[in-house]
Length: 231
Image (cartoon, rainbow, N blue to C red; front, side, top):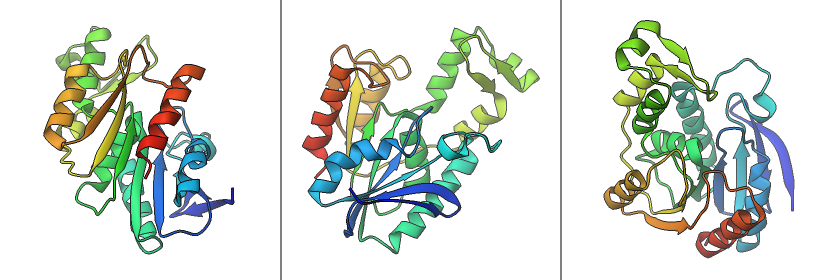
């Protein structure tokens, strides 16, 4: 496949596939990178799409820059990427993983998006943070007092982050297909079901799947799902 390493709005990016009016903006999740767009492009490009992958802060080519992946900056970056792409492609679609789906929805709600394909999306960050506080036995008063609290499961809880999340709600009305894993440890089934019910999205559930689709069986299921809905 034709692949171009480039920079869009100052962000390391990949543009994959032959020239087309239709494109997918690929937003990776935690510990991912723009390189993951190459795998999705194996499905999307033969169907007539181009794929654009970007590196979020702290990831890929931006891993050692000292930047932090914070929603207030990431949302602005994704918006700028979209505005750039709007002049280059007639129809922009979204393919996003985990926190990348949450950031995409915050950045692009109200914009003209063809469709969205979300894998293990975070759809209620406030719920996730409150659950992590319970896991770490941290009260809201303690978090407010200390500002930040490191946990023994590798996440740092932030009062500023939580307050920002509570002020920025998602209103999503884009045709959306969701691939959800039965054993997703970050988003409870009732949370994803509520999101689907309120947004009109369509849900596919992989039995015994995990939040991170990475085993041979999980990837085979993921690729089959992509081929079904990437049209």
